[in-house]
Structure formats: C-alpha cells, structure tokens
Length: 56
Image (cartoon, rainbow, N blue to C red):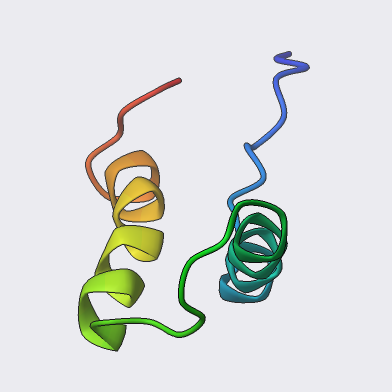
C-alpha cells in the first residue's frame, strides 16, 4: 500500500494572490497580459501529472 499523496496544485486564486503581493512589494503593473496563456500554464502541471502519468 502506497502512502504517497497526490500533489496540491496551485489554483488561479493562489497565483493571483501571489502576483498581487509581489507587485505590492516590488512594484510593477497589476493585471494579466494574456488570460489564456496564464490558464494554460496553470493547467499544464495537472495535465502532465494526471494524463501523461508523470511523477514529481
């Protein structure tokens, strides 16, 4: 029996919070240049793990 747990992937909300905090601390512009590319980047690790069978 494996005691290995499934990884916890970052959510869009968590990434938005991290981005907001980084902008507040270090400066820059709020907002996202390309929503579709961001969504793709967020979903890629899950795709790789669940569909392609990759491990950590």
